[in-house]
Length: 242
Image 1: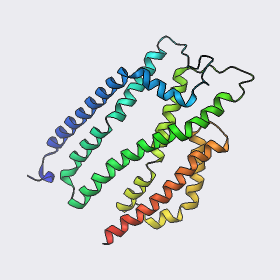
Image 2: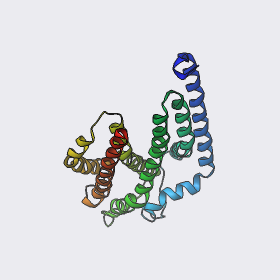
Image 3: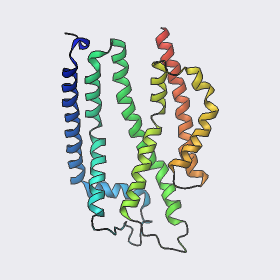
Image 4: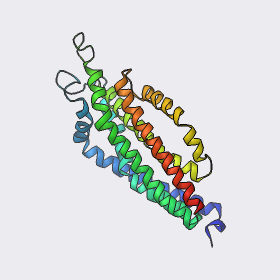
């Protein structure tokens, strides 16, 4: 029996078991993250080392704040740890219904998308966060002493890392849209001028500061990634013609 002849109930059962495996992988990853929560917190605090309070550490003011942030960071870390399992389950679920050529692109696109997302998070951590936090936490420090709540700080860091991960998905998304025939590669070429505007709008939305340096640190990678996406869209159409 081919994949197209299998009843819907069989597909739903398979989807359920694959989702269950992903959830289990996330929970196991969250448990591992919770075990190593202290070094994980120190890693996330490092871009703002020495700026968070007089003691160099963030503070908490609510009784349940530390518990809540522990659960949140553990779950998000568990999701990152479980990304290989997520990718493999998506590939195995989609593969039977695809042609040989389509299957080849899925094998490349899904892991590629995960790699791009993680690369964006790494870029945010090492390149974007240090100058941004130094500006935010030293601005006006002669008038007031910064005492940053751990939940506020972690939400800012995790949000920026998440959005930069999505920004780094730009080339993969452009390749997929071109390969699917949804958008023509020439449309992306004509959209260069708009991409520059969108890049700086994203820089203003993603970063909580208004200084041009931090906005450029977001805008410039997006512009470069857009150019990579144009090249990939050309490659997608060329392979199709061949």
